[in-house]
Amino acid sequence: MTTSAPPRTSLPSAGVPTPAPSRSPQLLRRLQLVVALVLVLAGGLAAWMIQDLRSDLATTPELAQQYARLGDVRHQLNTAATEAARGALLGEPAAGTHSAAAGEAVATAAGLLVEAAQARPQDADLLSEAGQGVVRYGKALAAAAGNPRAKAVPLLAAADVQLDTVLDGIGALQQRLGDEATVRPAGLNAVLAWLPGLALLAVVVWASWLVARLSHRVLNVGLVGSGIAVVVVLALALGAQSAAAKASEVARGTQFGHIVQVATAVDELDRAQRVLTTGVLRHEWTADSQTALDEATSAASDAAASEDLPSLKAFRTASTTIVGALRDGDWTTATATVTAGDEESLAGATEGFLDSAAKKTAAAVERAAAAPESAGTELAIQLVAAVAVALAGAFLGVLGLGRRLQEYR
Image 1: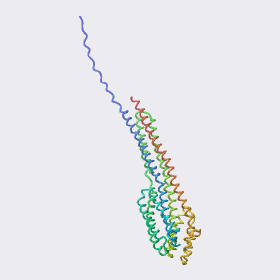
Image 2: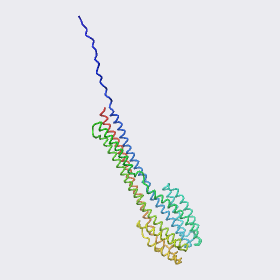
Image 3: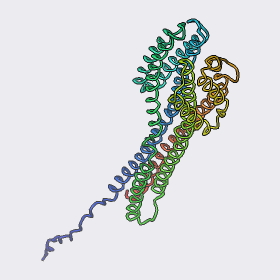
Image 4: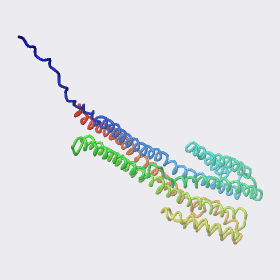
């Protein structure tokens, strides 16, 4: 009797839970993006700061050059006034030597104003007014030229009023330049480098800490490279600030100050000459005239002493001769001292001083241009280096995190 085996019954299999997918790869990919973004931001911040400094340095020499140019304009206009007065004292014709010199001085001043407008269009408003005033002043001097002294005196007095108006306008522009010289660009603010730089470095350190927890390794070489890159970019930005600050101080501070002082000395000396020449032309010397002469001479001497310019001893001697002659009614001696060209005359007493002042100004303008130019080259190198280091740091960070990602495949 054949018996059949009982049918097999399958036992239910115990359920094995499917492990949840790891979130570490997703986190590492996000960290790659964060680190790359951090380095790009660091490079971008450094590039903006350095470029801002370079732009400022590129325009810095214009301030010194413009101030010196305007100082020369003032000197030329004052020279025109003095020469016109000398021509009237000598009774020269309209085409006389001193009248011609006055016309040339006015033309030179007008040409310098055109150069000033081309160099700095932002000054065009005041320069345009000054240019129109110079034209009117030139016409007033031309109208006075060739007239006898008695008739020339009121005409030259009217011209002096126009001249003072022009000088006031130029003085306002010089004041604007002086105010602008004290302004510093935003890129020189060290806080703009330190705070963002440290914050971005903190993000890289935080990313390194997260990766260390995931991989149980203390350091990730790629993230270490990224952190070093942030530090290097920060150092380059701070180095650029230091170089730009030194160059700016030379151009906007030291050399600009020299130019202002020399221009002040020349301007005050010109004013003193105008007071003396006007007194001789009008055949009068008042207490107000003496006060104006003393103030102008003292101001010129103080400014000259600060810049180691020649003393005004010869000018004081000549002015003493003129004042003494005016008080004594000795118009012949006074006129001769004003109009002659020897060493004891007014012109001879100021010639050496003015030559030295011109050389001092030219040297200061040259130094004010050289310092920013040298710093600008240095900043260009630092700009390229900062961008290159930032990109290298981003690459290292992404690569370092990519190595960790491979462990999850």
